[in-house]
Length: 94
Image (cartoon, rainbow, N blue to C red; front, side):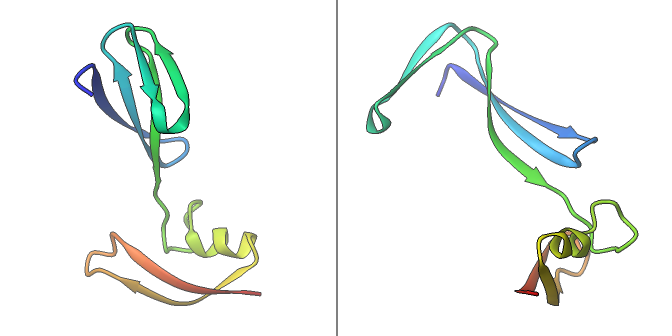
């Protein structure tokens, strides 16, 4: 892990945070449990995580109620923190 650095960027077009590992050197990584060997070039990145941001506001293009409806789900109840930064949404299949 010492040969990698962490990089997080906000992709405004997709309204998501993307996490990457960047190889600091040319190296070979072996994941023995997976039977996998990966060759990295110096500066090469690998996407490790996507954190998407949604809104509870219906007029927002990233509105979670619209996203749920598009996938056949109906929101029944929403719980949020005081700042409405995080939410848990109970939904059911329509």
